[in-house]
Length: 142
Image (spheres, rainbow, N blue to C red):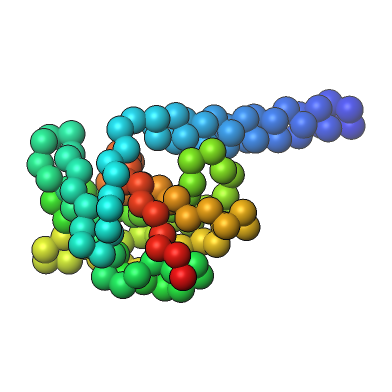
């Protein structure tokens, strides 16, 4: 009886871990689409949504490691919107921040992680109701 109980818990644990891994892999596989290059996020970056409307991402202050800065997104209709920062080919801790809907779009604050390798080539993914829109930018040297 004890062996059966332990086997049941082991199976349940494996199912939960498997479901979490599947969800993470599914999210990562969505990120293989088009990436828009952004010369200066302070001036704003334009991409397009699935419906063809212009999506604009803009930082209101310079992005600097571990310093809070304001982010706005406009041109996309969504119930939930967040921004996520990472780097191509590098595993990083989650850096995803929810934005709040405003009259003229979405706004919130984010914190850019620090890369231990000193890289400054960032990708920011705008998640609008689960749909990713990706931009890449380089953080200016100090």
